[in-house]
Image (cartoon, rainbow, N blue to C red; front, top):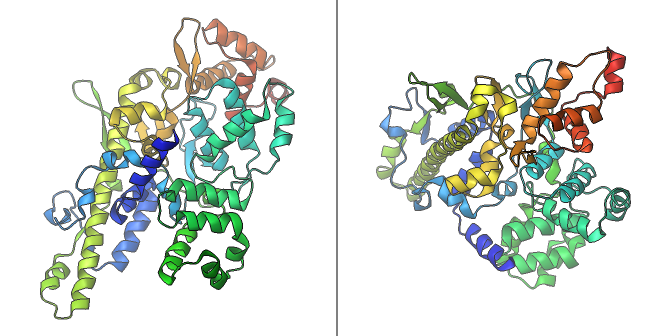
Length: 474
């Protein structure tokens, strides 16, 4: 396993800046992308807005674009894990539709999707067994807003050992799994561990990896004191190596969880529509109102061969390359979102007919295998991207969930079970609300084998009060 990981990370480091930009744009919401493009328009004279981007040939990147972007973005991302974490992004909130008295998660009232929700979503999209899932959920509850594990592992073990048969090594193993989730470095117990996790994940094949690791493990205090002279002397490195080392370390995030904190309200505009054709078949299309209309400024492009000063010509060439790369990255972003949405539609066609209760179990790996990309690519595409369906607006990640076995040997998605629970509670006698035990029994009668503890967790995730509280409220 370790050997395969090293090969994978070696491929990461061969990625060009243009491809890194493409990956970063892939994870942005529509609003964040528009802000990014606006900044590019203000700083790059080779870019301009186009009123008719779709038909204007000048919007197509020149052949001068870096060859690493010639092939499609999805295939380039196969060797990718969590490159977005190397960037200092102003991350806006993710949002999901919130439950109301009607259908499950079918309104436009956005809720803040914080760090713990983001981690739990990744856990629910994994193939952990039941015990490891319980351990993971408990550990995540002990992760603070900065992304650090705030409670000693021994204390968490003590609490869990009262209801599970396990060793502390089981917690260690699950913690390692969590520490490899997005954002990389989450679940660390110390600053040193947080930075080392990111260093290992991003730069294990980097020429300065060993020096950087040595500095973090043995002389972290020098870095905190900004004693750069002693750092150079201690590591015995040249001025150039020192500059590279500092740039590498500055790309690491000491507080990976803070990117999920924001007080900004982002209004949802669907990225993708589900439409019905005249023949009754469903298909997906991009929201044209979200289209980013930019193109190459032909006037400044023509000046490249006319300017006399070499530095002026180089300035224009550099900006032309950046403009081409941005346009190409946006095109690939749109293409990838569309392909993922098509994959979701293909697997969740029953949802269109019957609603949330018909959602099938589906994890990131299912779509990743179908599109021949890495799971982290699907994670980026489905985060903060929304789709308008006949049943409401949903974040793409909503359609991914773990499975629960049925009495017939089949599977039912956890999302569908939540919908069933909400429907049962909605139709209950308000004078005699259904307890979690009763809900468990009713689900079993419908062929769903689920523990009472799981029913309680699902009910609480829907922000539905307990039966005692519901009776009081009634």
